Image 1 (cartoon, helix red, strand yellow):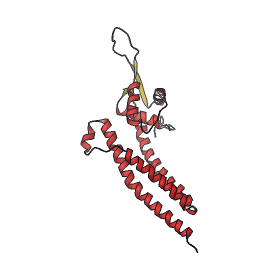
Image 2: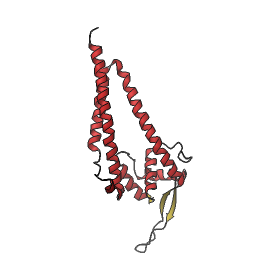
Image 3: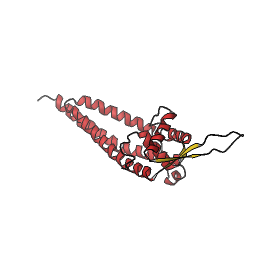
Length: 199
């Protein structure tokens, strides 16, 4: 990971860096894009959090900001606006973070499976947890965007591409998770039956 990105943990910072990489922008525009793309999965306390994140990203040399004069309208001078662009360091750090995020996602899944195993002697508790996991997965499947039928239809619009990738990721995650839930449920049901049988 690049030196400017080391130790940066905030998902808001990473999401914002990605938006700047996608298209150089002004702060106000970035706030609107952040809400449109990440509003349902990353909460922010307000606009000031985005501006603080931009300052951090610029301080780490992951983005650069330049003042751009606003056109004069109605005879009044406007303050110049800061326009943000990603640096090479920012693009490299973002690439490395996406790879690390996938590793962390796999570790998280493995941790969940290992933590569930603590209920080997209390299988009914495990079954309750499994029911909760299944409920979360089904809620997520209902909320997931429906991907457009053709990859070509997503090419023209960043919003369509976001919906397509997010929808397909959710669909494939469900295809993998629901069979695991059934496997875990069957395993703990067998443990419960074994514990309740005399002998």
